[in-house]
Image (cartoon, rainbow, N blue to C red; front, side, top):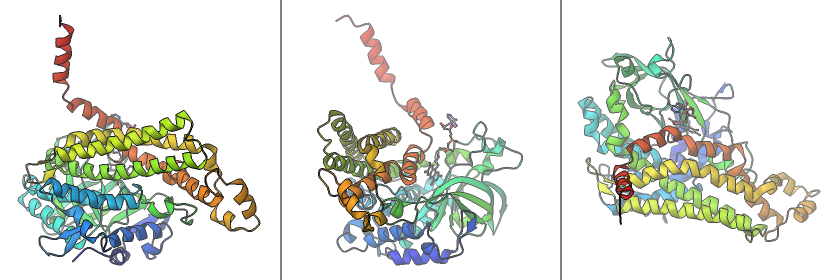
Length: 485
Ligand SMILES: Cc1cc2nc3c(=O)[nH]c(=O)nc-3n(C[C@H](O)[C@H](O)[C@H](O)COP(=O)(O)OP(=O)(O)OC[C@H]3O[C@@H](n4cnc5c(N)ncnc54)[C@H](O)[C@@H]3O)c2cc1C
């Protein structure tokens, strides 16, 4: 099959009948019609349709090595730097469409599965069948253009002990049985999966596991369709309030949703298992396979799009109400522009120093990507703080579309909401967008997302500290301390 159309994506998720719960109710209606999911599923459909746009088709697809049909470029296994740049160009199209506000456009995890399949011999170390499984799975989602989401983290019940020690009745998803034909039986929960309207769920390792016998029940990597019997998604409340694009410019389009995932006796077929019972292989899966570099590269492209979008909004606010003359405003906009340039420099460095990894993939250099994935969670909240400082009380002076259309209010609105450089309607559109980036539930969820989606920033920084090679630098300082010239 070739790249999907938006309609094919919608048809697929509507026919899957996954168990999706929201606000105490199990969704029994068509998912793409449900108020919490209507907009996001149609946004996803638009991403798929972009691959068919004659102006973009060439830049977003390549011929599948097996079917020869056009498939999504994020699945391409890059062999040259030019391949990486092609992938980056494709990913930027999707990221720009959403102003970087979609964390789970399908290219994020396509990049992961693509790299894992290249490293299939890594999985052979666990079981020779698992190498074939990951390769077949990669070809399956590539050739059917399926969208995956993932769940990595155990429920937040007790972080002082490992999952196997936490209670007498285990909470975290774990293996309870294995059967020669039925597969592996999973019970328990994982804390979060963003985008529960994906086609497939990757249940992958993340938390560092101990290597004791009792920890092996928590050591696995597998993939299941989102409608596999026994799988439940417990969604948080929606941050899409059902408002128009005018009123809620981002939340009405890009509310991805997050859900706790419950495995209520899920039999995972053997051909969907990639790792099992090996803490050591789970712990090093992302680094040893190179998947972390390819995922980080996609994240960098998204972060550039997001920071550019925020910068554009800040610059428009400065123009609109004539505050560009004030130094602190200039400084805040300048720092945001410097962040864009820093991210672009990380991108160039990762491409310039890209190398073929041990699995044969041209892989962007991890050093700048690792710096990026550690620094962006610290920078993004600051950028949002800047936007709040620029918009200030104006972020509360945002009449609704209904207010604008009410003939009794319109004259007041047109007069009192106008700005030095924009009429009331244009100012309102801009400020509603800024509100949705910096103030609304949608915007604040983005701040939380950027801080945490790649892991706990504190522990990530600790790992960064421990792995960064400062030895030669300390020697240089030592030499300086005793220098006589
Ligand atoms: C919007 C959003 C979307 C997400 N989407 C997904 C998704 O799609 N799939 C997925 O798998 N995950 C997702 N996550 C979860 C994300 O992976 C975790 O939030 C992240 O790994 C941190 O884990 P935690 O939230 O359990 O925090 P915890 O580990 O419980 O940490 C809570 C606090 O305790 C501190 N702490 C805990 N343990 C230690 C320790 N050992 N040392 C030092 N400090 C410690 C932390 O620093 C933090 O301050 C998402 C998170 C958010 C916010």
